[in-house]
Length: 237
Figure (tube, rainbow, N blue to C red):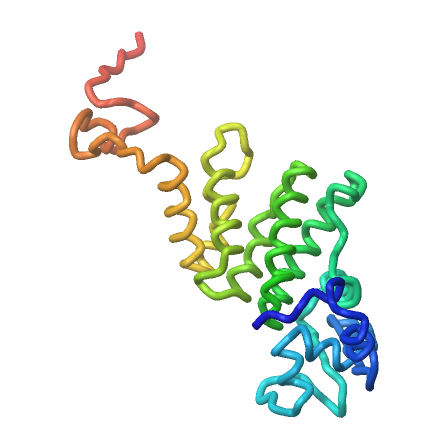
């Protein structure tokens, strides 16, 4: 059962969660430090509960400390705000020049919540990411989509989202990004290529293309200097 949002918790529960020992958490490659209430972490996240109770076979727990080196500090800041306040900022209230940075932080927050099994905040994060992209008029570049496929399961809604974004970018005749822009992503993550093709099929309404085995043979012939079959060159002189 999902834990109750801290903002809706009774005063007694809130007081209990903010009592007891603190846990030192070091985030990112620079090991930015937070000291958070152990009870609060365990209340919200089965991942943290397991880590802190010493059952972590693959956890980064050392002497009561947790290391999250693959987590972006900006994303962890949002997690901390939600843990203690039950909400994160709405991107609509953020200045235009900062909307994309916030959207990117929400993408990383989603990946963090996927890791620590926080479903409620995952859904908030993806909602804010979508809204941030829309309001900023920007979408993630191919290299920014790669972590989604590196850190999530095939069934992830975020994979569905970014593959649809890529499909729309590819199909937009006014967009400078074409399918070759995603070559590295396709090579690194074949599932991404499959998802993008499925998204294009979905977006086109499963429209059936003309049968390539019918029609002008010339379309599939090799020619010199852009010539077409049947074209007769004039001699000089």
